Structure formats: structure tokens, C-alpha cells
Amino acid sequence: IPKISVDAPFTDLAIGPTGRLEPPPAHDVNLVGWYAKGVSPGEPGTSIIAGHVDTATSAAVFVNLGELEKGDVFHVDRADGRRASFVVDSVETFEKDDFPSRKVYDDTARPEVRLITCAGTYDRTARDYTDNLV
Image (cartoon, rainbow, N blue to C red):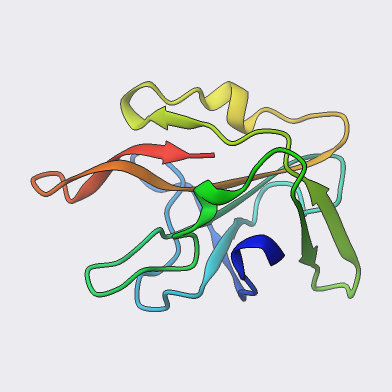
């Protein structure tokens, strides 16, 4: 993602026992995750890519995700050697307790990507942020 200087390797992500997408491992702050049972970036449908905003010790790969604006361009270099290019349509913040799963995860007719990270206030008791940035 040129605008925010993100050039990161991918790891596979899965849905956890709570029914939510599990984040990438926190030990590698430059790692993003792709929901591997979903659509590959560049294929018709909605591909999900997630990354940490920070960890207990430092900023992480998606710390500047909120700086993206409508019209910004980013690319995903795929394992098959192809490059999928995307244009940002919107940047929105949603409360985790009222997350619009259908809006974010439902498939689309054209290739789309949802970049997801944490946002809002960090709740020390829950050890999680209150919101998601998509």
C-alpha cells in the first residue's frame, strides 16, 4: 500500500471459536493475514486482509491504515505471480459490538478487498480495541 508504506508478507487466517476472524500473530508486527478459506485477492468476490494497528511493544503494519482515502490505489502481489490492483472506495470505523458483518464480508460480483484493523479506544480490561477500521 504505497501511501502508507506497507509492503508486508501474508499469513493464512481462520475464523476462531468466537466466530470472529482471528488476527495475525502479534510477534511479527509487519505481517498481514488473509482469510484463506475466502476469495483470493483479485478474484470475483470479497477478499479479507487483516493486520494489527499495534502490539504491546510497538506500532504494527496497519498503524496508518486510517490515512487511506477514497481513490487511493494499492496492490496485492499474489502467490501465483499476478498483481491485483484495487482503489479505495471508503474508509469506515465500526464498533466491534455492532460490526456489520454482512456489509463487510458478503461477496460482491467484482473483485474487492476489505482491509481490517483495530481502532477506537483500547480497553485494558478486555485487552482489545473497541472498534474496527475497514
